[in-house]
Length: 73
Image 1 (cartoon, helix red, strand yellow):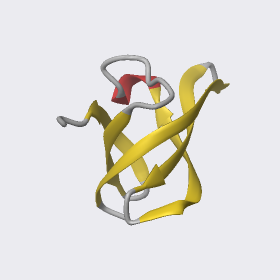
Image 2 (tube, one colour):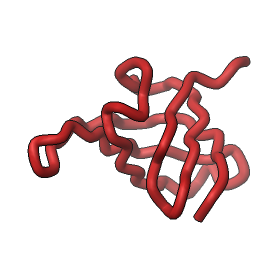
Image 3 (cartoon, one colour):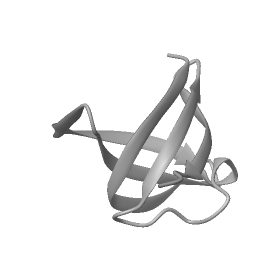
């Protein structure tokens, strides 16, 4: 999977994998608001800590989150 999604965050759960901090995000996409998806984003991909209710743009490369940034309204 390569590309970007605009998503709304519904839950944020920090976790560590091999001592690296990740955020497990429960999100919905505007095209499928009834489908809740879980995404794991490394801390270094986000400029700030993600929060519930925030709309963000998630960038993927080979199925991995490479960037997480605030969506411009």
